[in-house]
Image (cartoon, rainbow, N blue to C red; front, side, top):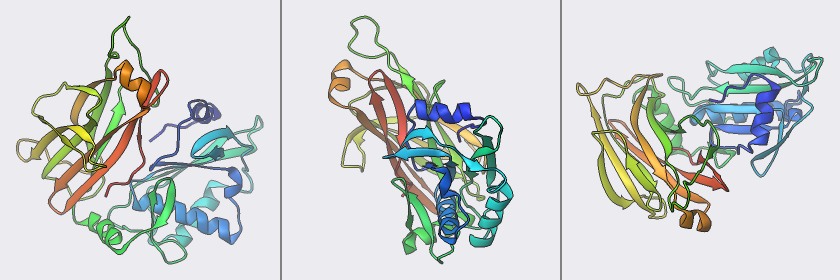
Length: 317
């Protein structure tokens, strides 16, 4: 989750053009209003995040095509309060979502205008959560959309099975990472990617087979042991990929409990000048299989001139 404490942090998101994703949504401050339509929309969006992977909704940033444009004028802190937001959610989302954090961030110099950051945990034992219109929603491609029956059943299963996510991070660079070349080298300096495992369900994971995919156009060297490597294809458009597989089991590994992160692996990734000139994004993703649970998810390694970042927009399916 993003650490957002001040207007400086919000402005940084705008300056870096950090796009919306499965776990991040921008909304203008007027979206927090007391009419019934706005209250229902608030409940729908929050329940969709909880029914997916959790995440953050920022009220106070204007966006266009999922890119933040500016921090807006904010809400009146005496009219829209954390207590009011909490009351709306507790009275409209069923069952109630536990663990939501509502952060108020001053926008104006006198502190009377504020933005809000809602940090929403992924639903587990009480999943799924129902919106005011008696429907269940999830996040998909920057939207909150109704869930299919099988998706509802999968979310209900969180109370009885593990729910494993692999998290890709650019080490030392939370958003954009510089892409640098030494002299006339045809390949960039290594971009270090850390992949960690986490379980968002109450049920611990004792056994799993986990696979990480990197686009075949990238030059990838693994830096951790006990990972099986092969050249294959992802299931996303049958893209040629490097596949790294790791088997986790007890007692060789500790059980993966909720809220605990373990390392899958650390990877050096390089991009060639030739590929960088022809393409702006490269596929990556993962697949997990465990007793009572399976998921696959794809994102992209996105390049913008001399910078790179990792973006996941697809939900785990």
